[in-house]
Image (cartoon, rainbow, N blue to C red; front, top):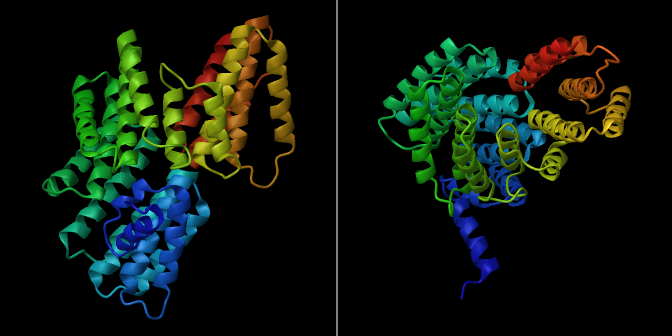
Length: 418
């Protein structure tokens, strides 16, 4: 009979000695934290036989914990481990690998907390490293460079440049000669997301087909039993694309298919297994034809509140948007007044831990309330357009284009209603 405790420890003891980290998707954030801490302890021992490999693994574990838990302190630990790995590099290729890890951490810091300067810093690191002698290292560097530049282009919102960066990604993918790797899989997923956005924006069926074929392959390659998070990320993009097509065609069947795909993505794991993945799924869903309930959005904000995370700001905005829309549909002016009072009180008492994005998010919520009140009463009791202009500028400075666009759209609606 399987002795759960003893045999599970044996499995992780074997995994700890392996360079294959695919097992990480099967463990929750608490166990992942423990593994990262243990690996750091092992790497720091004087008796450690392979310090470079040990510190590199510690870096990967802390980085994954930071990504899934939204823990910026784990990101700092990952950066420290990358520095120690670089100190113990025995050749130019290992030095290049350590540099790639440092750049990945900067990219993740942008993904978690915003700040386009992190992308600039990450790109500046890559040319400084020695030319990798191994194909795998060269592929990892090229893939990371393409992902960094894609983020910069996406922030600019230039559709022409977006097509160019897709071509850059294709060059890296073809150069990999079909060899599977985590770097190429990440690149494929992000390329599919960009192709999907470009296809929807331009109503280009070729781009949409490209994205659909790539995502289908990624879903099929990610077993729900062994790679639930990879599968969920691909399914989320599938659902987003289906939802966008449903909205363009006003097709109820496609709307139902999008809902099924979103449900399938969320069912791959529990919120505590990978909180940030779960929140991301709910936020993508909130922009689609079948948004999550108020309770789900409240939970998403609870998981991200007060941590300076981009997802936290987006979760707060989605929560208030849903709540305000429901109250407006009911004609509940008293309820709108209560939310407004709560927001204004929070803005007056902004203290430690409150970020510029939090301020921008609350300004957007106040704008939604003003628009709803105007529609219900036909009167205006203030002009928030300048505050929304500042909110959009703040969001762009932090690298959160989607939040900036919502502020701009709301400002346009308030201008029309004036």
